[in-house]
Length: 270
Image (spheres, rainbow, N blue to C red):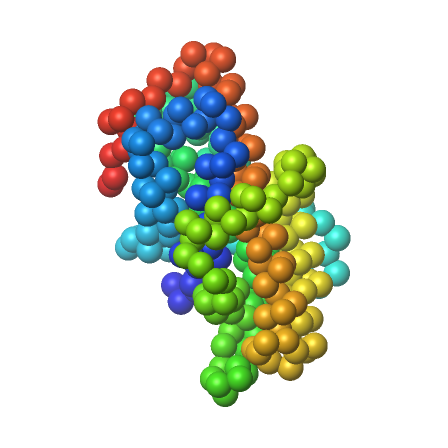
């Protein structure tokens, strides 16, 4: 476990998801986020998108690695908590736990702030195909591809870093572009379901595209990129829409109960 990279979607992927989600916040959720971060909340969210990764890297937190992924076996037909989330540690549990804290009117302000950071990060992890890949190769970490440059890349590295090198703009701009592309119909479709169904959907992207494209392309090359990039971009969009939708629901519920009183001093980094 100590040698297992935890990151999902890489730094830029998490930043895109965090930024794109801000376009779909309702009034209550946007007001809360602005009260947490100030008027520059979009920029500050880019910096905070990888907070959960930073926490995992701290000495003594190796046990948190399992919250970044949910792995499956060949022949599985869906997410089964007892099989795919042992001891309640998986990306699905991470999302649900963050939501539970946000919804708890007894949680402290710092606890809610951390929960928001975790929700932002783990929702992206849940939509990362290799982090919902196969346990047999530890989510693509033991599947190698030879690149056009004759270097060797793991499937994990490709979906965390290399594919993002082929996006044409930095995260802020990519989020703006994606916001113009997503239709109302897509949003309604993507908001349906729950984290458990979403992680299985993500696994099917790994099963049907990320892994078999290795053989179809014969390595890490332009053929692989042509097949993988559209899937990557759709997963980023889904993660952002669903992040906003779930956060909207929690905040609206808290606002109705009068339990969530946000103030600027919530932003207290450890």
